[in-house]
Length: 204
Image 1 (cartoon, rainbow, N blue to C red):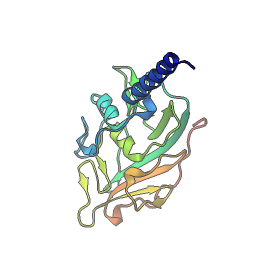
Image 2: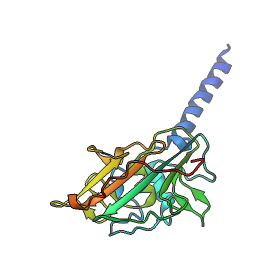
Image 3: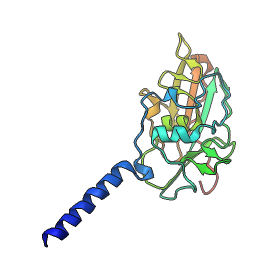
């Protein structure tokens, strides 16, 4: 290989590396925030919470998720979520992660009022419960949800398939056909029994 060709190839490699670094593919976006409670449009008040989409693109950029023109096909799984505050169920609104006005959708989203989470991603990767709330636009930490923070005998608990999760719930991986239950309140206000399964519609 002559010197001129070698230099040309080396230049192309360097150029390709720079393009990859500065213009990552959607599944390789890097989160730019550490404290997600400060994300644009985050709801920190009492339930119920709307599907906040006005600042959805900003939040997706901040947490490293793409704003898709069409739903991805590489990974397609579903989970169901229930939330109870003081023993009372909270409505999970439709269209979480769906900005109909600007015609884009998050890889994590909710279509209807069944509280089924859809993950339809163009890349096979791990998504977490914390990301779901960031997409929704509801503040969620290991000690709080919305305005509800651990205080005395009123605490936040998270269950997956009927089993309580003792670690940071934001880090829970979303996997196919999970039943996720989030509760806030006293022990006496826990649902009895804790939902452990959900009957998904055929095809989900």
